[in-house]
Image (tube, rainbow, N blue to C red; front, top):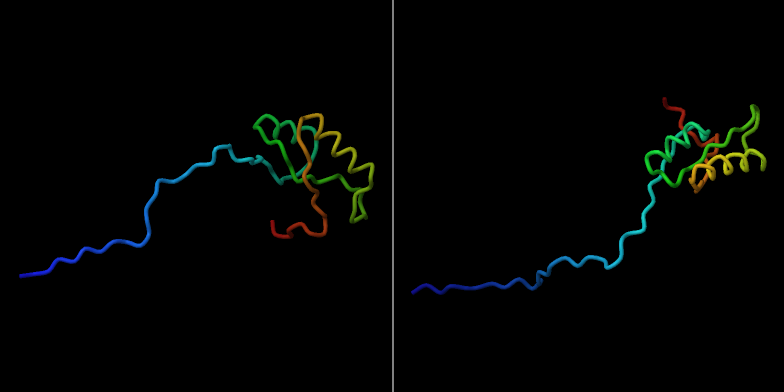
Length: 95
């Protein structure tokens, strides 16, 4: 007579549990330029946060306070928050 062995997994299987609150996520984007036309495009498609690219005068590697304030003003007019800025010396050279 044959003996039949039954094996039980030590891991119990449970139904997945879902969070009781929705995830807090933001739709964002990183693309240039940060001007009125591009910001309106973002707003039209529900983008609420961006990584901004301030317009920096030729010959400098940094934005002035006025250039940063102008970028924030333009974004604020479209209901978009600027979460960070791109530094010109860190951008990709690959096109």
